[in-house]
Image (cartoon, rainbow, N blue to C red; front, side):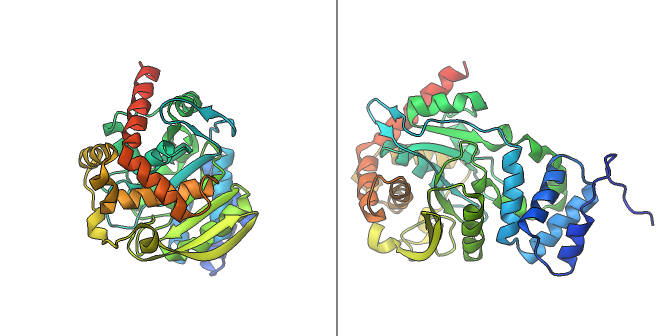
Amino acid sequence: MAAAAAPASGVSIKSQLDALIGGESLSEAQAHEACSNIADGLVASEQVAALLALLACKGAASTEVAGFARAMRERATHIAIADDAVVAGEVPCSGPIVDIVGTGGDGHDTLNISTTAAILAAASGCRVAKHGSVSSSSLSGSADVLQRLGVAMLAPEGISPSIAAAGIAFMFAPNFHPAMRHVAPVRRALGVRTIFNVLGPLLNPANARRLVLGVWSPKLLQPYADALLSLGSVEHALVVHCCGLDELAPIGVADAIEIADGKAVQTSIDTVAIAGPACGIADLKGGGPQHNADAITELLEGGDVAANSAVGRTVALNAAAALYVCGKSATIHDGFKVAQAALASGKGAVVLRRWATHCKSATA
């Protein structure tokens, strides 16, 4: 049987396939070369599928994650946002840009915690540039629920004005990563999680240098931390996993790696001590986009009941982590007090309304 032909350009990734078949991990340079050629549409779909399957079976090493991320970053549309700007108004915010993001894939279909926490972080004084897309593994992705909340998917030129107006913007991944179109058909045909599913948190188009990054498996903590260090892309970050979730929650002790000053330090976060009493994953369950949008709207309206609920404390905990990496609180515990107070006051609803109003006028 004749071998499948490569595209007209004839680029092959056979050397990378041979290495993976032999049980080796790719160097960052090898991974970068392979992903660059794939992202440019130069590799036969059969070879792309083989590479993705081999990486999925082995588990992506930090060198492979970093190499793929670097290649995709080089092909992304980037947004320049001043790091010292101040958003004035009823809920002022300032300081470095932060993203609160998770890999997804934990299988628990919780409410859109990181998305809600991003809104609350803005309501607590941070400037947020959230990067995400529609759901690939859950009932409701960040883009799905935000559209139900009245937040439009803005073009690249609309991101900086959104942050200037509301303290927050959402970067819809397909608008910023056109190279993904070359691998999309293969990913759909494979129907399994691949390395591209875990790249998103590393590809923030606003180059957010403060990051709260949740991973669906504790095995991903070190690869992500190593990749972030290799990419040199962050000043202060927390890579976290908590009791089966790709985000923090007052369920138990979270595993974490803190990155600061060019170093990665393994640590743990006693989430119950910070945001207790303890809850269960069932207390955080969500549903489809409209269900979650309704729940988020009600939560952000505030009040003591909302702020002290399991979901409210979980959202405030993740916003607190953002306050911490942004240097707005000395500890996550201190940040939690600020975020919970902002939630109780209804400032989250103020930010959401301001954001949705800006998006409506920007797309009119």
